[in-house]
Length: 503
Image 1 (cartoon, one colour):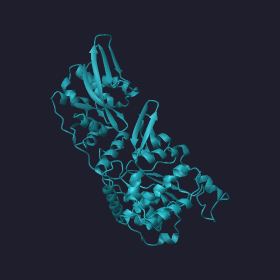
Image 2 (cartoon, one colour):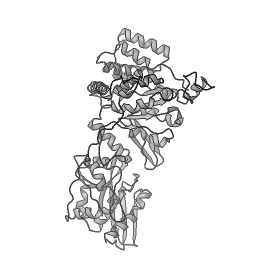
Image 3 (cartoon, one colour):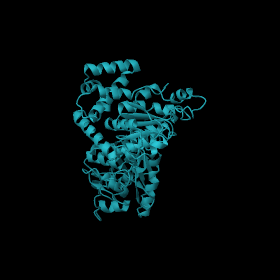
Image 4 (cartoon, helix red, strand yellow):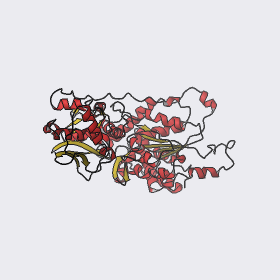
């Protein structure tokens, strides 16, 4: 029996799979067992054609390929290459021992070329844990080579790999792709007016506080959100690798490069629940996971189907999403910063008596009532973005640049990084809960009295109360204050005013 090794994906984790092959007496057949999906069952035809293109004839015997463990669901065309290698070893074309130290994945073209597949980066991580080398298609080599602890071979074809395994033409190791250049986005200095919105954007970026902006069309809500990546701090190496593993599974890494920019995802409001949370064929990650360690921007928030919005509630709290389907149950990390924009009503001009429709003000309650109270409660910061007059547009820029704001945000994040150094699951103030939150936000008598009176007057829930404390902690960090004082609390409370009507 010949054995090759590959991986099956369980979320961002790659689980080792043995591909076993035997050639025995019996009627000629090529069977693949071990809970394969349709694409794997079709692999035998791609393997046959690739062998034929290289003038390798299959014997008139029974070929059985088993993928162990047999109870683990296996999906994807990346099983083509390990199946082909197991068959080649069973036919004594490549030595058995040559396959013992490698993990392979790749799709076979009919002429024997290796076609790029998703998931090379998590596969390389799994190979490193098993102390094995990784073999993947040439196009996937730069991506997989980012895992420095594992040798990566990236042949262009099955023939090139065979020549390497029999020591006819050794392959050079793959090299890591280029670090992607910083993303270009607009500068905050281009925003006219909107001082309160700019301040809210800075606080949101500094502490990863979820932000909701409401205002008439053309007020600049989308423009403000698009400037957010420019003030976000770069990802740490660990965050960049974690985010890139998710993007690798989704097949959206560009030329094998890894970026230090925080991801910015802005799905259209027609997106389905599977597109937002993940799922579909292969249970791929959705938008909330693709935004992990970055920003998820939902424009026209009330236009999203309510059942889609409600799926955000648990990931916002836990930082991960469980994708449960009939044949799969996987988890993806989804620690994102939610930024949303909404018009005050369907026509958008509820706050303008000269332009509002005949249904005002009831249209505002009906429209924003599509956002449930529990979801609304999860926004740390809720602000109104008023319309900008033409006269204000003609004024020269008077606000700070993104670079200036980014320096303050980076300084506040560094304070939080040191504060939570001993807490692996806590990275920003928005993650602090329970006794840890009490520890980092001790209130004096004056501050506690202010918060208690505000909680009673505004009807804050326990979640809302804690979010006020987290936001105040970030405001204090931006000010360089070790203590959370009354002005910090007052500003945080001002972002919780009930300007929206929710149902």
